[in-house]
Length: 54
View 1 (cartoon, rainbow, N blue to C red):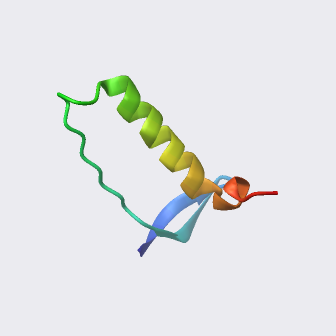
View 2: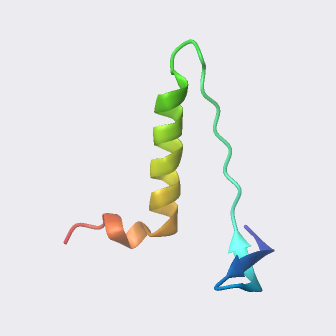
């Protein structure tokens, strides 16, 4: 992780940012499945507490 400038509520602030890279074999996976996986990963990273059992 590294500190990067991001916009929060219209202001530029420093926040820890972690870059994640994933590769998919196009012969196995079509684009729509990769997009759904990326969206799910992004949603989890944004609010991991939402995925905890109640």
